[in-house]
Length: 194
Image (tube, rainbow, N blue to C red; front, side, top):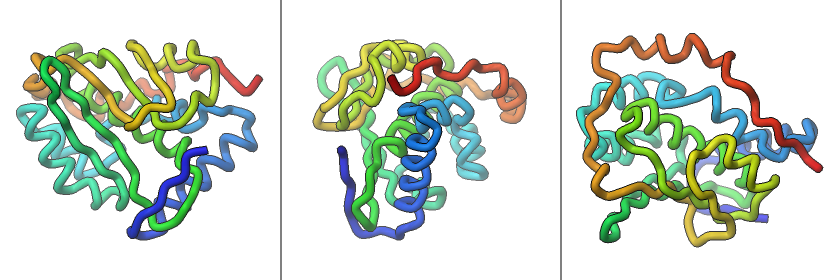
């Protein structure tokens, strides 16, 4: 199990516990990841609308680092460029020790969907990593992420080509609510606890 601790409010820690309970009660070890299929940057409310107005990834990252605490205290997003690779790290700093696996999969899934929504095909991941062990067979994660997914890694992160690190946002004049109208058409992940 992966445990998180740090000094912030306990509200997000409670949400982590609710997600873990929902996963256990439903028998769906990918509950958090499956839930992320229904959310992108618009789940962030007014903050998400601000992200949709950004002109570039650099601006999206800066806005996120400055204001994500308004959505949920404890989320930490950072970006590291290493040669030809850009790594976007996603971490949680919670006020108490709780099982964060479902919350991390939900969060990284939302980050992945948000970047895809904002930048369309301009910025596809080449790799995704989680600090915890896989909660279901690897094929289940492949249904959601179009890249290599690694587990028991040093960071929760999404990698892409550094050459694509400065795409412009594709939301343009498209009404943000238009992307939400078809959420129910996405099929759920087919994997469940064995």
